[in-house]
Image (cartoon, rainbow, N blue to C red):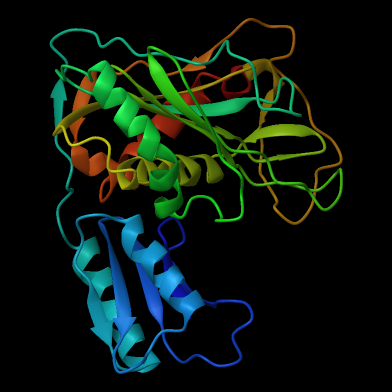
Length: 318
């Protein structure tokens, strides 16, 4: 088994084999670009159980896309290159329109943080379908029942991670525990820690920022990549069907963040909390709606705008 991932920021793709496979008997690829995602399956092979599960996860990750097929690795690589050229030359899949009235978003910036991570800054993404009537109590309960399975099907969390659902009259929530670091001072990439569906139809995701022993980092390259992943995970939940959506992001405990470069292999030895002791917020307010493509083929474009606005709000950016 292998996956083919397109790195949008670096304009390259990499092939990664699943651990534990002595030989590549079958391939399943997930191709990402700035304008699309194409799963592919090798022809003429019978999947083993672990490969079948992996293929099911990959193919369920992006809903509404076509599946391609190939006979060998050489054909797969050729199709990847062709798809990159095709999608990069196409027009933007997004459309924008000014909001006729402000949207009412439910924020979580003042809520408690993740278990075992008191005051850890959390990045939160909110997606609200515009002019949507919302869910009845019955509908919200039904979606709440399926939310854990929907999260697992996106591939955003491993199947062995315990998910904790909870509910109220206004929303249903699934909490995701943080992974244990190898060392206390290890650099750690951002992790999804919560998915919430509101009665209004709003879908909210919370995640840690990339961090190391010196604190949480707003990286000008890593932040748009993380927001892109959160947008696509929101789309893969298959909860929002409304064509027009409003999107916003924010960061809790912003005074504990720094604009810096994140190195996943090494923790920093020094950092400066420019915003410590100062009162400021990191929060975007939508003034326009965008098309549903923001949760799939247009995710990278939307994420770049949101990340730029958020970083420019930080005191150290001025």
